[in-house]
Length: 306
Image (cartoon, rainbow, N blue to C red; front, side):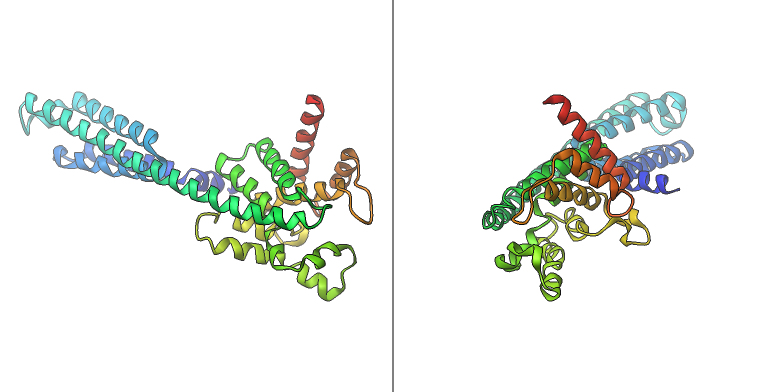
């Protein structure tokens, strides 16, 4: 049941377009006034253009035209009874042409809007990444941490075969998972190994602070907000661990691995193999077993390419 819900949520727009197309075909087949109902086919085409882009919108339009042509072949009298054959075919040619032009126009507008949104997203990520790097540059032990976490997290997401959009959200979440530390004293961050209870309580609010920073840029980075908010939460801390965003579960593993393999003022970094053994020891408790297993594949692939 959960897999069905996941599939429907993942492909909702495509399923919606398909359902509208099927409904249009059935109505066209059953109702006598077929010319009037041809305009109903604009609905799935415009829906596809608005949600899925030009390519799928054009394919939807072509499919609708072919479906109507087959309907004409199957029920020629139902069309010719309303007008002559020449009129029918000229009307259908004009209708099909306008349908495809509409799909191109709406799909193009959608893609241009997506490009502008992506440019804006990159700009916001760039600014926040600069802030994160500035924060890390104040401490040589954490320098480059966010970038390494982002790269490792992206590799894990790809290994888990997540959708492209989710992979990008994971990468952005990895870059910005510690952005909330901007609002915390640099001195407090540098002495993280010996914090008082009061200082630790302040330090542990950086995930919430980071999520709030991302909320302030509107919907541009909304996909990364739940990832940043839950990135420091243990896998077993909730009644339903799978309710944690998969991106947060991935970043938790990548973050812990980088922390263990990096030098700190109070200890040397672990070798990668030993850090991975630690991750496996926390599998099912602190970390998602599926993510740990996928990270193992990523590390194996990197060793093989060295």
